[in-house]
Image 1: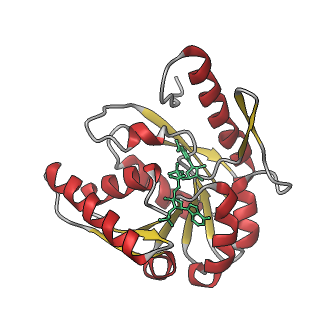
Image 2: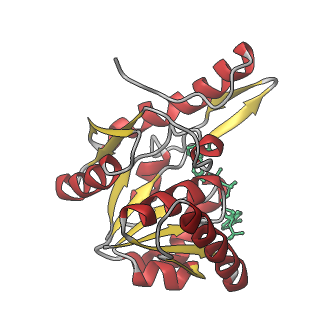
Amino acid sequence: MRIALLGGTGNLGMGLAVRFAQIGYEVIVGSRKFEKAQERAVKYNEVLKKLGGNSRVIGLQNEDAAKKADVSVFTIPWRHAFSTAERLKDLLTDKIVVSPLVPMERMGDFFIYAPPPEGSAAEKLAEILKKSRIVSAFHNIPAARFAKFDEKFELDVAVCGDDEEAKKVVIGLINQIEGLRALDAGSLAVSRMVESITPLLINLAIKSGSKDLGVRFV
Ligand SMILES: NC(=O)c1ccc[n+]([C@@H]2O[C@H](COP(=O)([O-])OP(=O)(O)OC[C@H]3O[C@@H](n4cnc5c(N)ncnc54)[C@H](OP(=O)(O)O)[C@@H]3O)[C@@H](O)[C@H]2O)c1
């Protein structure tokens, strides 16, 4: 199975790219710019080598990454993800697309959840990518910590989606990543609840002085 991280040049993209490649998947890091994608792929392969793995990451423009992948994760800031989805929608027909998108706004010193009229970022993405199989996941992962490979963690990933088979595939992928436990949280409409946890985590971190909080359901 080939996994693409669209806009996979940021922290969440890096954490997922290296970890999926470590498990043995073919990974494509996508970018708006081919050169940047190539450069990041070299960096991710260097990290993989240090971790004892093989070079499995290639870099392509988002369009080519979407075309070649079976599963594409939108690791793009939410404000820009929807216009990217409009551009890529034909290339993603019938494919699994994962939304980690968290729409939020700053309000003074804190952040609030700012969902679109569709109810959640995942539902808006599904509205644009009508012919894709949308699954919502990874919202509560502290991405900066996730992109450090000497970090140990035990985090839960709540996964939502209306396509049960696609959701099962994504849950299977997540459960192969050391330190992550995927939990089926229900239909895509539940995504708004999961997405809204992320600004709460950030606010708690700001107030308490702790960094990079995640979620574990116990
Ligand atoms: N950061 C977190 O802790 C965290 C946690 C959970 C979920 N998320 C979600 O995961 C997604 C990625 O987060 P991140 O922090 O990794 O993002 P990021 O580092 O801010 O951005 C990731 C990549 O998005 C691409 N991008 C930026 N502006 C763009 C535009 N106008 N059009 C298309 N692509 C653009 C860039 O790639 P190129 O320049 O290479 O194209 C950039 O490297 C977000 O939707 C966020 O809500 C983040």
